[in-house]
Image (cartoon, rainbow, N blue to C red; front, side, top):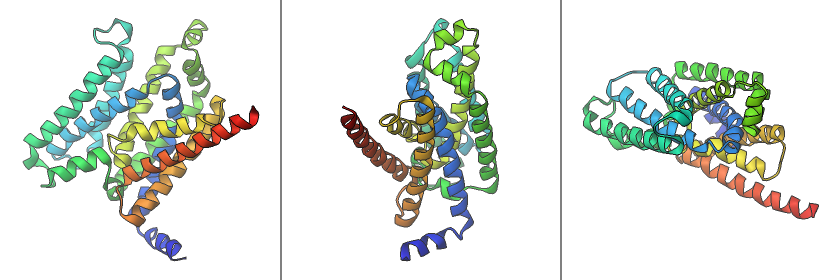
Length: 286
């Protein structure tokens, strides 16, 4: 009972409620596109865009912006569009372009924070970088504006996924056939890239830029151990993602551990359990 009373006491604080609301919404959005990214082998794009977001956040920090979302979101979306619209005619293709942008943005971001460290609102550069990379405390210091922005963007992402579900499904499984039947595959790949960019920016406050890929990929991989259909995997992935984030956030608050790392650790445990469950189910069927 003491644990439940402690949890109830924490939830009497607005910042904990805000963190839980934002964490659940971000996890839901991440899981919806995570299945598509895994199946299309686009998982690396999420990692690359997270580093771009880190670079943009570094610029926002040294310029003294009170709300860095106005720089981070447009820059990340633009990079997502450039990465997916280059196609086969681009000079630098595929994973090479993602790797170049990813490493470049990460290095430039850290360099800017070091060179202009005197412009940072906080004098502790190591703490600023750690919070940005691993999301150690930022989820618990959200302003009301950031919470409402997250709610609005999350609603837009979920609505877009539901509305374009059939098109995303066809582009995910057989892009060539979808294109042959008249589907504008380039347009829907672009839509996926923009949605992913929005999710990456939102997730930085939850798990940090280095751990975002885990938030996107682990629930999808866990669901695929047990379920086979796209719809079942997507629904299970959403449930697992929301559950793991909520549990990870509670554990983090109770034990004082880093939020992002704790959520990813819970995701890893759930992945191991679902892998074991998948082996058992396959053994029973045989």
